[in-house]
Structures are given as structure tokens and as C-alpha cells.
Image 1: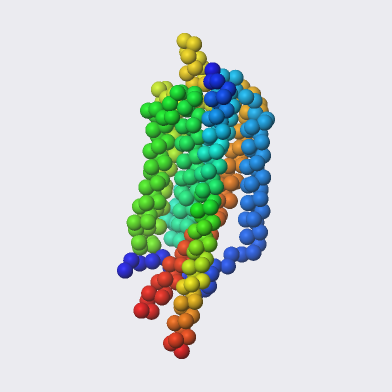
Image 2: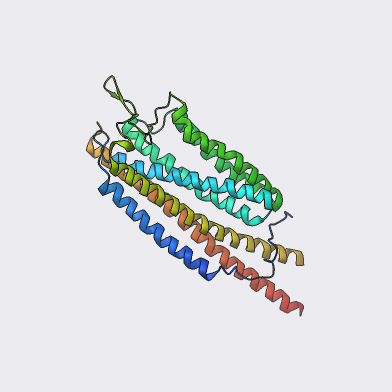
Length: 262
Length: 55
């Protein structure tokens, strides 16, 4: 029989009771997240200017960049939690590292899919071979593999150690995705967050899209609010995911306790 | 220049995609938490019944 994860002290307790004060904070954070999400949508739809050549489809940008910012934070949490696990060997950091990927992967999925939806009318294709796009897909696959490989290791300590090292190394792909549009001249992906307009029209053809955050203060304001909102939504999600993992841990402990009696 | 109708359609598709993924993730984990809580209660009942039978 496979060894199951048991956190000391859990085997004799009942359904985990979460601290009421922390629960209230989490509930407050949930309300703030929902409100910020609505504010972001309001700003993106009604406050940010309509891009002249792309039209309303360009407003996807606020979800595309915001979700990647949040994914970056979530996967960064996995790195920090992984390092803390390796130093302290405390399983709570392993739970946090897992929650980071569980939140970061759907956010990266949103980035990929919103990018594809934007590309279809703008580049006339859902997907193309491009350094940024390829790097993002590889990054997504690396973190999908993290979840798959985690579930294949049954010894809790080995799983946590492996996941910590993997989570730290995998972050290289996130950094590469972030910087690739600045280091690879052959990418079609727009460099929107830049001090000056870096998108251009070549021989009458729209090459990257005439859009930059420096072109209108409403764009940078909306992007700022959007990125903050996405990061707060991400933090709320991570907190809930840690709680779900605590419940899963308790289930495994009870199963082990019953199995040992037989 | 992207025709406004095309641009609006993909704009709607983009936001719909975001909504579906976020809602899907939230619902998945809410259901998982509920299922885990129910499983913990069932396992505890089983454990208590075994304790009672032993005593």
C-alpha cells in the first residue's frame, strides 16, 4: 500500500476547523476580489480608449496581461514556498507551493487562450510559431507536468522535496516568457509595456499593432488596476486552495488511520 | 483595420473565455472542498463505529 501524507496532530482531530478571524479576513478578501474584478471589467470596457485599428478586441489585453501578472505572482509563490520547504521541511510550505501552481496554471491558460482569441482577428491565425507563444506553451506544459508528476509520487517527503526543486527550476520558464519579447527580435508579439511606442507599421502592413501603454494614461491606469485586481484574485484563490489541500490532507490521515487498524 | 463586427465578436469571445475558466476553476474547487468535507465526516463515523464495536 502506498504511504499517505499525514501531518502530525491531524490524525486525532475532526474536520479541520479554520481560525474564525482568518476566515473573516478571507471572506473580506473574497468580496474585495469580486469588486475589483467588476471595477477592472468596467474600466476595460468603458474607461480605456478604443484602439483605432483593432477596435474592441484590443480590450482583451487587460485580461491577457493581468492574468499573466497574476500567474507570475502565483508561480513565484511556489518558488518561495519551495525554498521555505527545503529549509524548514515543514509540510505547510508544500501545500502553499502546490496552491501556487494550482492557481497559476489556470491563469496561464487564460493568458494563452485570450492571446489566441486576440490573434485570430489581428494576425489572422489562432496560433503561429513565435518565440513568445512557443515559450508560453512550454511554460504551461512544464507546470501541467508538475501537477502530474506530483501525483505520481506517493511518499509525502519525497513528493514535497521533488515538488520544491521542480517548482524552483520551472520558474526559469516564467522568467524566459517574460523577457523573450525583449531579447528576441524575431517575435511578432507586441511589446506593450515599454517606455515608448515600440509597435509599428512596416510597408503599410500592421506588424505589431499600434498600441502601447505610453500612448494614453487611461491605458496605463486600467492596466495597473487590472494587474492589481488579478493579483488579489490570485491571492484569494491560493488561500482557498491551501484550505482545500488541508481538507485533502485530513482525508488521507483518516484513511491511513482506518487502514492501520485492519 | 479589423471590421468592428469582427472585433466585437472576438472581444466577447475573449471575455467569455476568461469567465468560463475562472468559474470552472472556482466551481471545481468548491465541489472538491464539499466532497472532502463529506468524506471526512463519513470516515469519522466509520472510525467511531469501529471504536464503539471494540469497546
